[in-house]
Length: 132
Image (cartoon, rainbow, N blue to C red; front, side, top):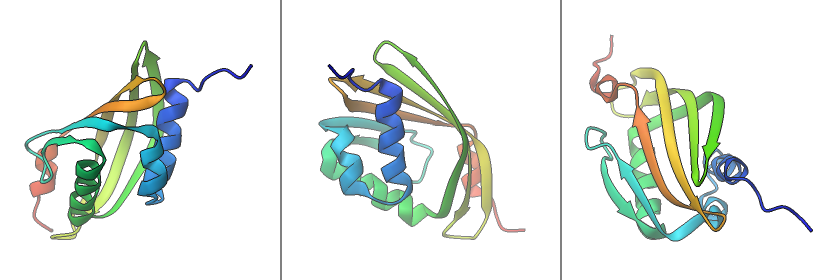
């Protein structure tokens, strides 16, 4: 009998597909009524529910960032919660400014699918920088 995947394995598989832009494959790990809470201070801040709104969020993120790289990843799991910590480095599409900051994301897992995501950006104000 095969063990079910851990929450960390589910999030890692999900992120693998997100990071290569394969939204369809990523959605296989996401509950149909997923709830994502982006901080209101982000350009794409707000509450998103379900696959359609998740895809809308991904489009908004793509309109904000010209590039995005995360390194290194650390994971922790407690019950149904998975914590992912990394440093993000990205170039803003609007003004070309490069932003680098710590980033933590909390995932809630139920029945082997992601039911909630709550990202925490170290300093969203960095996105309002002027080039220079």
